[in-house]
Length: 199
Image (cartoon, rainbow, N blue to C red; front, side, top):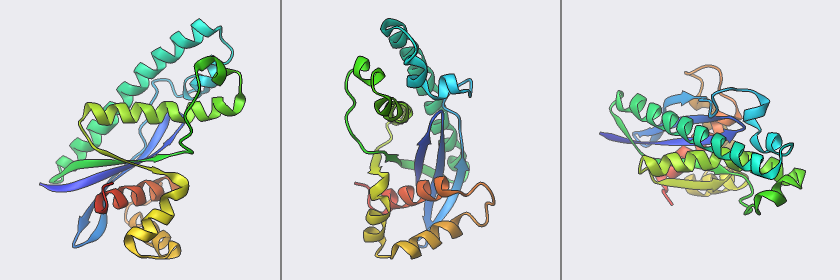
C-alpha cells in the first residue's frame, strides 16, 4: 500500500482534516472532512471551559472529564474513519500532522477558570488533546507544527515562496469544490510537510 498523511486544523468542537499522498512527487488530496468532536454541537459543549467557568470547581472538573471522554471518542472515530476512507483507495495512513496554537503550558484548573484569556486557550487545547489521544490509540506518529510557523517551515521544506505555496494549496482543492477554506489549505500544507519531512 502507498502511504498517506492526514493534517488537522482544530476548532472548538470540530476539526478540519485533509488526507494527502504523493503522486509522482506531487501532493494529491485523498479525503477532506469536517468531523465534529462533540455529540451536541452547541456552545455549552463546543466551549467546555467557558461552560465550566460558571460552575463550582468540583462540578467543573466532573463536567470537563466527561466532555474529555466524549471528545476523545469522537476524535478516535474521525481518525479511524479517514484511515478506512484512504484504505479503500489503496493507501495507508502512516502519520498525522496537527497544527498547534502558541504551545504555552496551561496552569491548574482553578487558575484557568479565573482568567478569560486562559479559558480561550484551554478550549482550543482541549480538542487538540483529544486528537493526540486518538493518534496514540491508533499508534499513529504525529508531527506537531505551530500554526504561526507552518508557512515558514513549509517554504523551507519545499523551497518555494509563501505565495507559490498558497497557490499550490489553493489548486489542491479545485477538483473537490467547497469547502476549501484556509482550514483545509493549512491542514493540507501540514500533511504535505509531514509526509515529506516527518519530524
